[in-house]
Image (cartoon, rainbow over all chains, first blue to last red; front, side, top):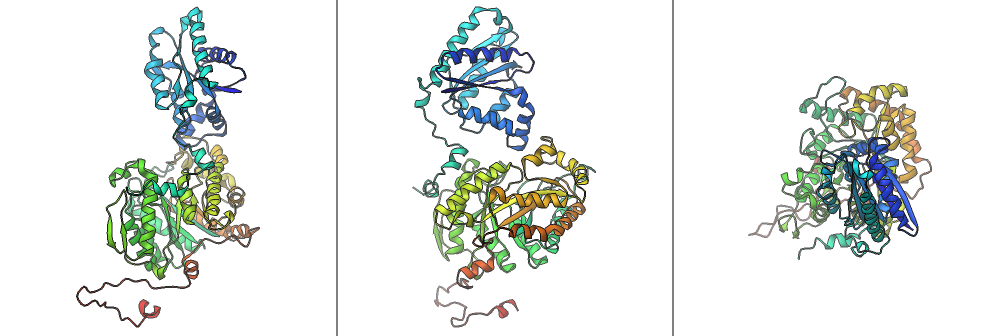
Length: 205
Length: 388
Protein backbone atom coordinates (compact mmCIF):
# COMPACT_ATOMS: atom_id res chain seq x y z
CA UNK A 1 0.00 0.00 0.00
CA UNK A 2 1.21 3.48 -0.84
CA UNK A 3 -0.20 6.37 1.15
CA UNK A 4 -0.56 9.79 -0.38
CA UNK A 5 -1.50 12.82 1.72
CA UNK A 6 -3.02 15.79 -0.08
CA UNK A 7 -2.65 19.11 1.73
CA UNK A 8 -4.73 21.91 0.26
CA UNK A 9 -5.05 25.46 1.50
CA UNK A 10 -8.04 26.84 -0.41
CA UNK A 11 -10.34 29.11 1.55
CA UNK A 12 -13.61 29.25 -0.36
CA UNK A 13 -16.22 26.55 -0.87
CA UNK A 14 -16.14 25.34 -3.56
CA UNK A 15 -12.46 26.00 -4.00
CA UNK A 16 -10.43 25.82 -7.18
CA UNK A 17 -7.44 24.84 -5.04
CA UNK A 18 -9.35 21.85 -3.71
CA UNK A 19 -10.54 21.06 -7.22
CA UNK A 20 -6.96 20.95 -8.47
CA UNK A 21 -5.91 18.90 -5.43
CA UNK A 22 -8.63 16.36 -6.07
CA UNK A 23 -7.68 15.94 -9.72
CA UNK A 24 -4.01 15.44 -8.87
CA UNK A 25 -4.93 12.97 -6.12
CA UNK A 26 -7.17 10.96 -8.44
CA UNK A 27 -4.56 10.65 -11.19
CA UNK A 28 -1.82 9.79 -8.66
CA UNK A 29 -4.04 7.09 -7.15
CA UNK A 30 -4.66 5.60 -10.60
CA UNK A 31 -0.92 5.22 -11.09
CA UNK A 32 -0.50 3.28 -7.85
CA UNK A 33 -1.31 -0.37 -7.18
CA UNK A 34 -2.79 0.02 -3.70
CA UNK A 35 -3.30 3.71 -3.08
CA UNK A 36 -4.48 5.19 0.20
CA UNK A 37 -5.33 8.85 -0.15
CA UNK A 38 -5.86 11.19 2.83
CA UNK A 39 -7.02 14.77 2.32
CA UNK A 40 -5.93 17.48 4.77
CA UNK A 41 -8.03 20.61 4.23
CA UNK A 42 -6.23 23.42 6.04
CA UNK A 43 -9.26 25.73 6.28
CA UNK A 44 -10.77 23.28 8.76
CA UNK A 45 -7.59 23.46 10.82
CA UNK A 46 -7.05 27.23 10.66
CA UNK A 47 -7.68 27.95 14.35
CA UNK A 48 -5.78 24.84 15.41
CA UNK A 49 -2.77 26.01 13.39
CA UNK A 50 -2.68 29.43 15.06
CA UNK A 51 -3.11 27.80 18.47
CA UNK A 52 -0.18 25.51 17.67
CA UNK A 53 1.97 28.53 16.85
CA UNK A 54 1.07 30.08 20.21
CA UNK A 55 1.17 27.03 22.47
CA UNK A 56 3.78 24.90 20.73
CA UNK A 57 1.66 21.77 20.52
CA UNK A 58 -1.07 20.58 18.13
CA UNK A 59 -4.70 19.99 18.98
CA UNK A 60 -5.76 16.34 18.62
CA UNK A 61 -7.21 16.82 15.11
CA UNK A 62 -4.23 18.83 13.89
CA UNK A 63 -2.04 16.15 15.44
CA UNK A 64 -3.85 13.56 13.30
CA UNK A 65 -3.14 15.56 10.15
CA UNK A 66 0.53 15.98 11.06
CA UNK A 67 0.80 12.26 11.80
CA UNK A 68 -0.74 11.46 8.42
CA UNK A 69 1.96 13.55 6.75
CA UNK A 70 4.63 11.86 8.85
CA UNK A 71 3.48 8.42 7.74
CA UNK A 72 2.81 9.32 4.11
CA UNK A 73 4.84 7.84 1.28
CA UNK A 74 4.18 10.92 -0.82
CA UNK A 75 2.70 14.38 -0.44
CA UNK A 76 0.66 16.64 -2.70
CA UNK A 77 0.84 20.27 -1.54
CA UNK A 78 -1.56 22.76 -3.13
CA UNK A 79 -1.88 26.44 -2.26
CA UNK A 80 -3.66 29.44 -3.67
CA UNK A 81 -1.33 32.31 -4.56
CA UNK A 82 -1.62 35.19 -2.10
CA UNK A 83 0.51 38.30 -2.62
CA UNK A 84 2.83 36.52 -5.05
CA UNK A 85 3.50 33.52 -2.80
CA UNK A 86 1.93 30.60 -0.93
CA UNK A 87 -0.76 31.62 1.53
CA UNK A 88 0.03 32.18 5.20
CA UNK A 89 -2.26 29.33 6.16
CA UNK A 90 -0.36 26.96 3.86
CA UNK A 91 2.99 28.06 5.26
CA UNK A 92 1.80 27.74 8.84
CA UNK A 93 1.07 24.06 8.35
CA UNK A 94 4.64 23.42 7.28
CA UNK A 95 5.93 25.73 10.05
CA UNK A 96 4.43 23.50 12.75
CA UNK A 97 5.68 20.21 11.27
CA UNK A 98 8.51 18.88 13.40
CA UNK A 99 11.93 19.09 11.74
CA UNK A 100 12.84 16.00 9.78
CA UNK A 101 9.30 14.88 8.96
CA UNK A 102 9.72 15.63 5.24
CA UNK A 103 13.30 14.39 4.93
CA UNK A 104 13.49 12.44 1.66
CA UNK A 105 9.72 12.49 1.18
CA UNK A 106 8.44 12.92 -2.43
CA UNK A 107 6.34 16.08 -2.78
CA UNK A 108 4.31 17.33 -5.71
CA UNK A 109 3.88 21.10 -5.57
CA UNK A 110 0.85 22.80 -7.08
CA UNK A 111 -0.76 26.25 -6.97
CA UNK A 112 -3.80 28.11 -8.21
CA UNK A 113 -4.16 31.78 -9.07
CA UNK A 114 -6.36 34.17 -11.00
CA UNK A 115 -3.87 34.63 -13.81
CA UNK A 116 -0.95 32.81 -15.40
CA UNK A 117 1.34 35.68 -14.42
CA UNK A 118 1.84 33.95 -11.06
CA UNK A 119 2.98 30.64 -12.50
CA UNK A 120 6.59 31.02 -11.37
CA UNK A 121 5.42 30.89 -7.75
CA UNK A 122 6.01 27.14 -7.98
CA UNK A 123 9.71 27.60 -8.58
CA UNK A 124 10.27 30.82 -6.68
CA UNK A 125 8.34 30.01 -3.51
CA UNK A 126 7.14 26.40 -3.19
CA UNK A 127 10.20 24.58 -4.47
CA UNK A 128 12.67 26.43 -2.18
CA UNK A 129 10.40 25.83 0.83
CA UNK A 130 10.37 22.08 0.30
CA UNK A 131 14.04 22.00 -0.61
CA UNK A 132 14.75 23.60 2.75
CA UNK A 133 12.62 20.92 4.41
CA UNK A 134 14.75 18.25 2.67
CA UNK A 135 11.82 16.88 0.68
CA UNK A 136 12.33 15.46 -2.80
CA UNK A 137 10.25 17.76 -5.00
CA UNK A 138 9.10 16.04 -8.20
CA UNK A 139 10.37 17.72 -11.38
CA UNK A 140 6.94 18.75 -12.68
CA UNK A 141 4.89 21.23 -10.69
CA UNK A 142 1.26 21.96 -11.51
CA UNK A 143 0.08 25.54 -11.81
CA UNK A 144 -3.52 26.30 -12.66
CA UNK A 145 -4.78 29.80 -13.43
CA UNK A 146 -8.54 30.16 -13.65
CA UNK A 147 -8.38 29.88 -17.45
CA UNK A 148 -6.48 26.58 -17.25
CA UNK A 149 -9.56 24.77 -16.01
CA UNK A 150 -10.84 25.03 -19.60
CA UNK A 151 -7.54 24.00 -21.20
CA UNK A 152 -6.47 20.47 -22.15
CA UNK A 153 -2.85 21.25 -21.24
CA UNK A 154 -3.66 21.13 -17.50
CA UNK A 155 -4.58 17.43 -17.65
CA UNK A 156 -1.31 16.63 -19.38
CA UNK A 157 0.71 18.43 -16.70
CA UNK A 158 -1.27 16.73 -13.94
CA UNK A 159 -0.68 13.33 -15.54
CA UNK A 160 3.04 13.93 -15.86
CA UNK A 161 3.46 15.27 -12.28
CA UNK A 162 1.24 12.56 -10.77
CA UNK A 163 3.23 9.88 -12.58
CA UNK A 164 6.46 11.26 -11.14
CA UNK A 165 4.99 11.38 -7.63
CA UNK A 166 3.54 7.88 -7.88
CA UNK A 167 6.84 6.49 -9.07
CA UNK A 168 8.84 8.08 -6.26
CA UNK A 169 6.25 7.33 -3.58
CA UNK A 170 6.07 3.66 -4.48
CA UNK A 171 9.80 3.43 -3.95
CA UNK A 172 10.70 3.13 -7.62
CA UNK A 173 12.65 6.37 -7.65
CA UNK A 174 15.62 7.85 -5.86
CA UNK A 175 13.94 9.19 -2.74
CA UNK A 176 14.36 6.08 -0.59
CA UNK A 177 18.01 5.84 -1.44
CA UNK A 178 18.59 9.13 0.40
CA UNK A 179 18.07 8.13 4.04
CA UNK A 180 17.77 10.92 6.57
CA UNK A 181 20.65 11.30 9.01
CA UNK A 182 18.49 13.46 11.25
CA UNK A 183 16.54 11.70 14.00
CA UNK A 184 13.11 13.00 14.91
CA UNK A 185 11.94 13.40 18.50
CA UNK A 186 9.64 10.40 17.97
CA UNK A 187 12.58 8.24 16.92
CA UNK A 188 14.65 9.40 19.92
CA UNK A 189 11.77 8.67 22.28
CA UNK A 190 11.39 5.16 20.88
CA UNK A 191 15.09 4.38 20.66
CA UNK A 192 17.26 6.95 22.43
CA UNK A 193 20.85 7.61 21.46
CA UNK A 194 22.83 6.04 24.34
CA UNK A 195 24.28 8.63 26.68
CA UNK A 196 27.80 7.23 26.30
CA UNK A 197 27.53 8.11 22.61
CA UNK A 198 26.33 11.65 23.41
CA UNK A 199 29.31 12.05 25.74
CA UNK A 200 31.77 10.63 23.21
CA UNK A 201 30.90 13.21 20.59
CA UNK A 202 32.16 15.83 23.05
CA UNK A 203 35.49 14.21 23.88
CA UNK A 204 38.38 16.55 23.05
CA UNK A 205 40.20 15.34 19.96
CA UNK B 1 5.88 13.11 48.22
CA UNK B 2 7.14 16.67 48.03
CA UNK B 3 4.60 19.33 47.11
CA UNK B 4 5.63 22.89 46.36
CA UNK B 5 5.55 25.84 44.01
CA UNK B 6 7.77 27.20 41.30
CA UNK B 7 8.01 30.66 39.86
CA UNK B 8 9.42 31.97 36.60
CA UNK B 9 9.59 35.51 37.98
CA UNK B 10 7.70 37.22 35.16
CA UNK B 11 6.82 40.89 35.56
CA UNK B 12 3.48 41.00 33.78
CA UNK B 13 0.75 43.64 33.71
CA UNK B 14 -2.44 42.73 35.55
CA UNK B 15 -4.88 42.64 32.59
CA UNK B 16 -7.79 43.64 34.83
CA UNK B 17 -6.14 46.88 35.99
CA UNK B 18 -3.44 47.47 33.38
CA UNK B 19 -0.91 47.96 36.15
CA UNK B 20 2.54 46.38 35.89
CA UNK B 21 4.39 45.83 39.17
CA UNK B 22 7.84 47.32 39.56
CA UNK B 23 10.80 44.97 39.62
CA UNK B 24 11.22 45.76 43.30
CA UNK B 25 7.60 44.85 44.05
CA UNK B 26 7.91 41.62 42.09
CA UNK B 27 11.13 40.60 43.80
CA UNK B 28 9.67 41.26 47.26
CA UNK B 29 6.44 39.48 46.25
CA UNK B 30 8.48 36.42 45.32
CA UNK B 31 9.89 36.29 48.84
CA UNK B 32 6.43 36.78 50.36
CA UNK B 33 5.10 33.92 48.23
CA UNK B 34 7.96 31.65 49.28
CA UNK B 35 7.35 32.41 52.97
CA UNK B 36 3.66 31.76 52.48
CA UNK B 37 4.54 28.39 50.94
CA UNK B 38 6.29 27.41 54.13
CA UNK B 39 3.47 28.78 56.27
CA UNK B 40 0.81 26.61 54.57
CA UNK B 41 2.99 23.51 54.89
CA UNK B 42 4.45 23.13 51.39
CA UNK B 43 7.81 21.39 51.00
CA UNK B 44 9.52 23.13 48.08
CA UNK B 45 10.02 26.61 46.65
CA UNK B 46 11.78 26.82 43.29
CA UNK B 47 12.70 29.86 41.23
CA UNK B 48 13.54 30.09 37.54
CA UNK B 49 16.54 31.76 35.97
CA UNK B 50 16.17 34.29 33.19
CA UNK B 51 18.49 37.01 31.99
CA UNK B 52 16.13 39.33 30.20
CA UNK B 53 12.98 41.39 30.73
CA UNK B 54 10.20 40.81 31.65
CA UNK B 55 11.78 38.57 34.27
CA UNK B 56 13.37 39.35 37.64
CA UNK B 57 14.74 35.83 37.96
CA UNK B 58 18.42 36.41 37.25
CA UNK B 59 20.79 35.22 39.97
CA UNK B 60 18.59 32.52 41.55
CA UNK B 61 21.10 31.70 44.30
CA UNK B 62 20.74 35.18 45.83
CA UNK B 63 16.98 34.64 46.01
CA UNK B 64 17.37 31.15 47.44
CA UNK B 65 19.87 32.29 50.07
CA UNK B 66 17.59 35.13 51.14
CA UNK B 67 14.49 32.94 51.23
CA UNK B 68 16.55 30.37 53.10
CA UNK B 69 17.31 32.93 55.78
CA UNK B 70 13.63 33.81 56.14
CA UNK B 71 12.34 30.22 56.30
CA UNK B 72 13.07 27.15 58.39
CA UNK B 73 12.01 24.01 56.58
CA UNK B 74 11.35 24.79 52.93
CA UNK B 75 13.51 22.96 50.38
CA UNK B 76 14.94 25.58 48.02
CA UNK B 77 15.29 24.66 44.39
CA UNK B 78 15.34 26.07 40.86
CA UNK B 79 13.16 25.73 37.80
CA UNK B 80 15.54 25.93 36.11
CA UNK B 81 19.24 26.71 36.55
CA UNK B 82 20.70 27.40 33.11
CA UNK B 83 23.37 24.74 32.65
CA UNK B 84 23.99 25.91 29.08
CA UNK B 85 24.97 29.53 29.52
CA UNK B 86 26.09 29.61 33.15
CA UNK B 87 29.67 28.60 33.84
CA UNK B 88 29.52 25.22 35.62
CA UNK B 89 32.37 26.43 37.84
CA UNK B 90 30.14 29.22 39.17
CA UNK B 91 27.19 26.81 39.55
CA UNK B 92 29.41 24.48 41.62
CA UNK B 93 30.50 27.33 43.89
CA UNK B 94 27.19 29.16 44.21
CA UNK B 95 25.00 26.18 45.02
CA UNK B 96 27.53 24.70 47.44
CA UNK B 97 27.53 28.05 49.22
CA UNK B 98 23.74 28.14 49.47
CA UNK B 99 23.83 24.54 50.63
CA UNK B 100 26.04 25.57 53.57
CA UNK B 101 24.04 28.71 54.34
CA UNK B 102 20.75 26.79 54.45
CA UNK B 103 22.10 23.65 56.19
CA UNK B 104 21.44 21.48 53.18
CA UNK B 105 17.96 22.71 52.22
CA UNK B 106 18.91 23.21 48.58
CA UNK B 107 18.73 21.19 45.39
CA UNK B 108 18.60 22.34 41.78
CA UNK B 109 16.99 21.61 38.47
CA UNK B 110 19.04 22.07 35.33
CA UNK B 111 17.53 23.39 32.12
CA UNK B 112 18.60 24.97 28.87
CA UNK B 113 16.60 28.20 28.88
CA UNK B 114 13.95 29.64 26.63
CA UNK B 115 15.39 32.75 25.00
CA UNK B 116 17.70 32.48 21.99
CA UNK B 117 19.80 35.63 22.50
CA UNK B 118 20.77 34.55 26.04
CA UNK B 119 23.26 32.19 24.40
CA UNK B 120 25.23 34.83 22.47
CA UNK B 121 24.99 37.26 25.41
CA UNK B 122 26.91 34.70 27.41
CA UNK B 123 29.22 33.76 24.57
CA UNK B 124 27.51 30.50 23.64
CA UNK B 125 25.85 29.01 20.55
CA UNK B 126 22.22 27.88 20.91
CA UNK B 127 22.78 25.13 18.34
CA UNK B 128 25.09 23.55 20.91
CA UNK B 129 22.38 23.65 23.61
CA UNK B 130 22.24 19.89 24.23
CA UNK B 131 26.01 19.49 24.01
CA UNK B 132 26.50 22.37 26.46
CA UNK B 133 24.10 20.74 28.90
CA UNK B 134 25.99 17.46 28.63
CA UNK B 135 29.52 18.79 28.88
CA UNK B 136 28.83 21.41 31.55
CA UNK B 137 27.00 18.97 33.79
CA UNK B 138 29.75 16.36 33.47
CA UNK B 139 32.18 19.02 34.70
CA UNK B 140 29.82 20.20 37.46
CA UNK B 141 29.63 16.66 38.84
CA UNK B 142 33.40 16.39 39.00
CA UNK B 143 33.77 19.81 40.67
CA UNK B 144 31.50 18.66 43.51
CA UNK B 145 33.03 15.20 43.83
CA UNK B 146 36.76 15.73 43.31
CA UNK B 147 38.80 18.13 45.42
CA UNK B 148 41.23 18.96 42.63
CA UNK B 149 40.07 18.94 39.04
CA UNK B 150 42.11 18.90 35.84
CA UNK B 151 39.73 19.25 32.94
CA UNK B 152 39.54 20.06 29.26
CA UNK B 153 36.43 20.28 27.10
CA UNK B 154 34.97 21.99 24.06
CA UNK B 155 33.11 24.92 25.56
CA UNK B 156 35.12 26.30 28.44
CA UNK B 157 38.68 27.25 29.15
CA UNK B 158 40.62 24.25 30.58
CA UNK B 159 41.14 23.83 34.31
CA UNK B 160 44.42 22.77 35.89
CA UNK B 161 44.50 22.12 39.62
CA UNK B 162 41.17 23.81 40.27
CA UNK B 163 39.36 23.35 43.58
CA UNK B 164 35.76 24.53 43.80
CA UNK B 165 35.00 26.07 47.20
CA UNK B 166 33.24 25.69 49.47
CA UNK B 167 33.24 21.90 49.22
CA UNK B 168 29.69 20.46 49.36
CA UNK B 169 28.13 20.36 52.83
CA UNK B 170 28.89 17.12 54.68
CA UNK B 171 30.66 15.84 51.56
CA UNK B 172 27.34 15.43 49.72
CA UNK B 173 26.54 17.47 46.59
CA UNK B 174 23.02 18.90 46.21
CA UNK B 175 20.56 16.57 44.47
CA UNK B 176 20.11 17.40 40.79
CA UNK B 177 17.00 17.26 38.64
CA UNK B 178 17.09 17.66 34.88
CA UNK B 179 14.19 19.52 33.32
CA UNK B 180 13.16 19.17 29.70
CA UNK B 181 9.92 19.43 27.80
CA UNK B 182 10.70 17.76 24.50
CA UNK B 183 14.40 16.78 24.37
CA UNK B 184 14.83 13.04 24.83
CA UNK B 185 18.59 13.55 25.27
CA UNK B 186 17.95 15.29 28.61
CA UNK B 187 15.73 12.48 29.91
CA UNK B 188 18.51 10.14 28.80
CA UNK B 189 21.06 12.24 30.70
CA UNK B 190 18.99 12.19 33.91
CA UNK B 191 18.59 8.42 33.58
CA UNK B 192 22.29 7.84 32.91
CA UNK B 193 23.33 9.54 36.15
CA UNK B 194 20.39 8.31 38.20
CA UNK B 195 19.40 11.94 38.82
CA UNK B 196 15.84 13.24 38.99
CA UNK B 197 13.81 14.15 35.90
CA UNK B 198 11.28 16.98 35.95
CA UNK B 199 8.71 17.65 33.26
CA UNK B 200 7.27 21.15 33.06
CA UNK B 201 3.97 19.48 32.22
CA UNK B 202 1.86 22.61 32.47
CA UNK B 203 1.91 23.93 28.93
CA UNK B 204 1.69 20.54 27.26
CA UNK B 205 -0.73 17.70 26.66
CA UNK B 206 -0.36 14.75 29.01
CA UNK B 207 0.83 12.57 26.12
CA UNK B 208 4.06 14.63 25.83
CA UNK B 209 4.75 14.33 29.53
CA UNK B 210 4.03 10.63 29.49
CA UNK B 211 6.44 9.96 26.60
CA UNK B 212 9.30 11.79 28.29
CA UNK B 213 8.70 10.29 31.74
CA UNK B 214 8.39 6.80 30.24
CA UNK B 215 11.70 7.23 28.42
CA UNK B 216 13.40 8.45 31.61
CA UNK B 217 12.03 5.58 33.71
CA UNK B 218 12.95 2.96 31.09
CA UNK B 219 16.50 4.25 30.77
CA UNK B 220 16.92 4.72 34.55
CA UNK B 221 16.38 0.99 34.84
CA UNK B 222 18.62 0.30 31.81
CA UNK B 223 21.51 2.12 33.49
CA UNK B 224 21.17 -0.01 36.60
CA UNK B 225 19.82 2.53 39.10
CA UNK B 226 16.83 0.36 40.00
CA UNK B 227 13.42 -0.59 38.63
CA UNK B 228 11.69 1.98 36.41
CA UNK B 229 9.07 2.74 39.02
CA UNK B 230 11.76 3.83 41.50
CA UNK B 231 13.09 6.60 39.24
CA UNK B 232 12.79 10.14 40.66
CA UNK B 233 10.11 12.06 38.76
CA UNK B 234 8.83 15.60 39.24
CA UNK B 235 5.94 17.33 37.48
CA UNK B 236 4.70 20.87 37.12
CA UNK B 237 1.08 21.82 37.62
CA UNK B 238 -1.09 24.90 37.39
CA UNK B 239 -4.42 25.80 38.93
CA UNK B 240 -6.71 28.64 39.83
CA UNK B 241 -9.34 27.86 42.41
CA UNK B 242 -12.22 29.43 44.26
CA UNK B 243 -14.73 27.68 46.50
CA UNK B 244 -17.27 28.06 43.67
CA UNK B 245 -15.81 26.75 40.39
CA UNK B 246 -17.63 29.28 38.17
CA UNK B 247 -16.08 32.11 40.21
CA UNK B 248 -12.65 30.64 39.52
CA UNK B 249 -13.32 30.54 35.76
CA UNK B 250 -14.69 34.11 35.68
CA UNK B 251 -11.83 35.55 37.72
CA UNK B 252 -9.02 33.68 35.94
CA UNK B 253 -10.23 34.11 32.34
CA UNK B 254 -8.75 37.59 31.71
CA UNK B 255 -5.39 36.39 33.09
CA UNK B 256 -5.55 33.29 30.91
CA UNK B 257 -6.60 35.20 27.79
CA UNK B 258 -3.67 37.60 28.13
CA UNK B 259 -1.04 35.28 29.61
CA UNK B 260 2.41 35.59 28.03
CA UNK B 261 2.74 31.91 27.17
CA UNK B 262 -0.63 30.83 25.81
CA UNK B 263 -2.69 34.02 25.71
CA UNK B 264 -4.68 35.01 22.62
CA UNK B 265 -4.61 31.39 21.48
CA UNK B 266 -6.81 28.50 22.54
CA UNK B 267 -9.81 29.06 24.77
CA UNK B 268 -9.53 28.47 28.52
CA UNK B 269 -11.84 25.50 28.09
CA UNK B 270 -9.74 23.91 25.31
CA UNK B 271 -6.51 24.51 27.19
CA UNK B 272 -7.75 23.08 30.48
CA UNK B 273 -8.84 20.00 28.59
CA UNK B 274 -5.55 19.62 26.70
CA UNK B 275 -3.14 20.41 29.57
CA UNK B 276 -3.00 19.95 33.36
CA UNK B 277 -4.27 23.51 33.96
CA UNK B 278 -7.25 23.23 36.31
CA UNK B 279 -9.56 26.17 36.92
CA UNK B 280 -12.32 25.37 39.34
CA UNK B 281 -13.10 24.33 42.87
CA UNK B 282 -10.51 23.01 45.35
CA UNK B 283 -12.04 19.57 44.95
CA UNK B 284 -11.53 19.70 41.18
CA UNK B 285 -7.90 20.77 41.64
CA UNK B 286 -7.38 17.94 44.10
CA UNK B 287 -8.86 15.31 41.79
CA UNK B 288 -7.02 16.54 38.70
CA UNK B 289 -3.69 16.64 40.53
CA UNK B 290 -4.07 13.12 41.82
CA UNK B 291 -4.86 11.94 38.28
CA UNK B 292 -1.35 12.89 37.05
CA UNK B 293 -0.21 9.53 38.44
CA UNK B 294 -2.38 7.77 35.86
CA UNK B 295 0.19 8.54 33.16
CA UNK B 296 3.34 9.50 35.08
CA UNK B 297 3.27 6.71 37.67
CA UNK B 298 3.89 7.32 41.37
CA UNK B 299 6.22 10.30 41.47
CA UNK B 300 8.23 12.31 43.96
CA UNK B 301 7.73 16.03 43.47
CA UNK B 302 4.75 18.14 42.43
CA UNK B 303 5.40 21.84 41.84
CA UNK B 304 2.62 24.29 41.03
CA UNK B 305 2.95 27.55 39.14
CA UNK B 306 0.78 30.06 41.00
CA UNK B 307 2.27 33.52 40.49
CA UNK B 308 2.33 34.36 36.81
CA UNK B 309 0.36 36.19 34.12
CA UNK B 310 -0.02 39.33 36.21
CA UNK B 311 -1.95 37.80 39.11
CA UNK B 312 -1.65 40.24 42.02
CA UNK B 313 0.19 39.15 45.15
CA UNK B 314 -3.00 39.21 47.21
CA UNK B 315 -4.64 36.72 44.84
CA UNK B 316 -1.58 34.48 44.79
CA UNK B 317 -1.52 34.35 48.59
CA UNK B 318 -5.24 33.49 48.59
CA UNK B 319 -4.54 30.70 46.13
CA UNK B 320 -1.90 29.35 48.48
CA UNK B 321 -4.32 29.50 51.41
CA UNK B 322 -6.76 27.41 49.39
CA UNK B 323 -3.97 25.00 48.47
CA UNK B 324 -3.10 24.75 52.16
CA UNK B 325 -6.67 23.72 52.90
CA UNK B 326 -6.59 20.76 50.48
CA UNK B 327 -2.97 19.88 51.20
CA UNK B 328 -3.71 17.17 53.81
CA UNK B 329 -6.17 15.52 51.39
CA UNK B 330 -3.63 15.80 48.58
CA UNK B 331 -0.92 14.14 50.67
CA UNK B 332 -3.35 11.41 51.66
CA UNK B 333 -4.33 10.89 48.04
CA UNK B 334 -0.72 10.66 46.86
CA UNK B 335 0.01 8.08 49.59
CA UNK B 336 -2.91 5.92 48.53
CA UNK B 337 -1.84 2.88 46.57
CA UNK B 338 1.79 3.97 46.62
CA UNK B 339 3.98 0.84 46.74
CA UNK B 340 6.44 0.74 49.64
CA UNK B 341 9.43 0.40 47.30
CA UNK B 342 8.76 3.71 45.54
CA UNK B 343 11.27 6.09 47.15
CA UNK B 344 10.77 9.67 48.25
CA UNK B 345 12.76 12.41 46.54
CA UNK B 346 16.30 12.51 47.95
CA UNK B 347 16.96 15.20 50.55
CA UNK B 348 20.22 16.30 52.09
CA UNK B 349 19.53 14.10 55.12
CA UNK B 350 18.80 11.02 53.00
CA UNK B 351 21.86 11.60 50.81
CA UNK B 352 24.06 11.97 53.89
CA UNK B 353 22.64 8.77 55.32
CA UNK B 354 23.22 6.97 52.00
CA UNK B 355 26.83 8.19 52.05
CA UNK B 356 27.37 6.59 55.44
CA UNK B 357 27.19 9.80 57.41
CA UNK B 358 28.44 13.37 57.16
CA UNK B 359 32.04 13.99 56.20
CA UNK B 360 33.63 17.38 56.37
CA UNK B 361 35.48 17.78 53.10
CA UNK B 362 36.90 21.26 53.63
CA UNK B 363 40.03 21.82 51.63
CA UNK B 364 42.67 23.80 53.52
CA UNK B 365 45.42 25.50 51.63
CA UNK B 366 48.90 24.12 52.15
CA UNK B 367 51.67 26.61 52.83
CA UNK B 368 54.12 26.23 49.94
CA UNK B 369 57.14 26.91 52.19
CA UNK B 370 56.40 25.03 55.40
CA UNK B 371 54.12 22.33 53.95
CA UNK B 372 51.71 22.88 56.86
CA UNK B 373 48.12 24.00 57.02
CA UNK B 374 46.38 26.21 59.53
CA UNK B 375 44.16 23.31 60.46
CA UNK B 376 44.93 21.37 63.61
CA UNK B 377 45.45 17.86 62.30
CA UNK B 378 44.10 15.84 65.22
CA UNK B 379 40.90 17.59 65.94
CA UNK B 380 37.61 17.56 64.01
CA UNK B 381 35.60 20.71 64.74
CA UNK B 382 32.22 19.78 66.12
CA UNK B 383 28.99 21.26 64.84
CA UNK B 384 28.20 23.35 67.92
CA UNK B 385 31.54 25.06 67.72
CA UNK B 386 31.10 25.79 64.03
CA UNK B 387 27.64 27.22 64.39
CA UNK B 388 28.36 29.13 67.60
